[in-house]
Image (cartoon, rainbow, N blue to C red; front, top):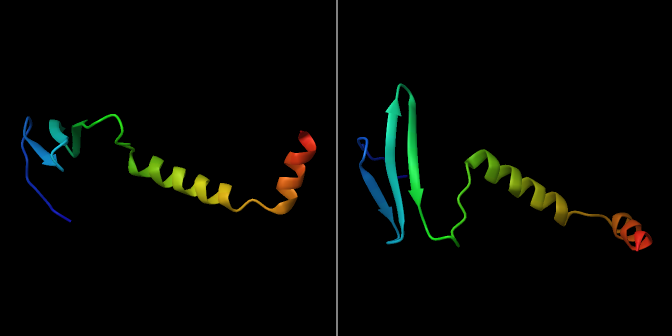
Length: 73
C-alpha cells in the first residue's frame, strides 16, 4: 500500500488515465473526486464486496433451481 499526504486540491494519477483529487477535508472525513474512463468501474468497497458476494451466490445455483427455471418456460 502506498500512503500519501495530500492537501485539498492536490491530486494523484494512476495508470496515466485515472486522477484522484482531494476535494475537501472536514474533521475525520475526506471528500475525493475520481476522474476515469467510462470503461473503468468505480465502487465503494462495501458495494464492491456485496457485488462479489452476489456473483458467487449466482454461480452456486443447484440443479433443482435450473429445473425450476425450465418449468417456468
